[in-house]
Amino acid sequence: SGTWTAVDLETDQNLYAFASVAANDIWLVGAHDTLVHYDGSTWEQVKYLDTDKDTILYDVCGISGNDFRAFGSKVAFNYDGTEWKEAYLPLYARDAWCTNAQNIWVVDGSDGVLFNGREWLSLSRIVGFPQWEPYAVWGTGVDDIWVLCRHTIVHHP
Image 1 (cartoon, helix red, strand yellow):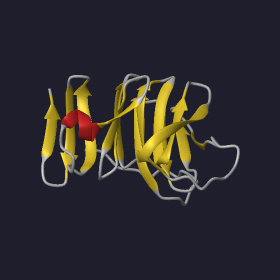
Image 2 (cartoon, one colour; image 1 turned 90 degrees about the horizontal axis):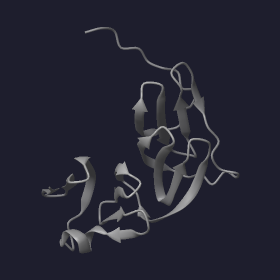
Image 3 (cartoon, one colour; image 1 turned 60 degrees about the vertical axis):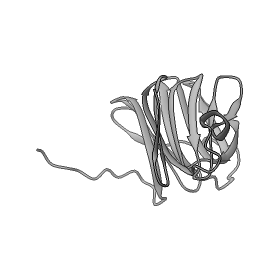
């Protein structure tokens, strides 16, 4: 029970995802370079690019307070606790899930990739389903990963 309250984020951009590792460390991502941070008392838009690229960020995941990852259209950004840095992503992110820096999963509706800390690996090769159309990924740990596909759900224990 209780009352729900709308929060004024001072943005009119579409928001697509959020992630948190603590009640005072929440990140929101969205359209047109939108990245918003909550520190426990204030929501603040964060400029993370030197130029306006009109980047759409579709998902974000938190590993720790000094390790967040944001994913968009063939681009990723890594937060080290101080700043966001651009990183390579081999596909257009639709959904992402992270447990640690060596276990980052991203899917795009036609394939997915796993970042093992060194490189991105194609999930089609790992999972063995060449046309599985993964739309969402989630898990509880390194050895418990679920991928929602167009016509099924795949589990890796």
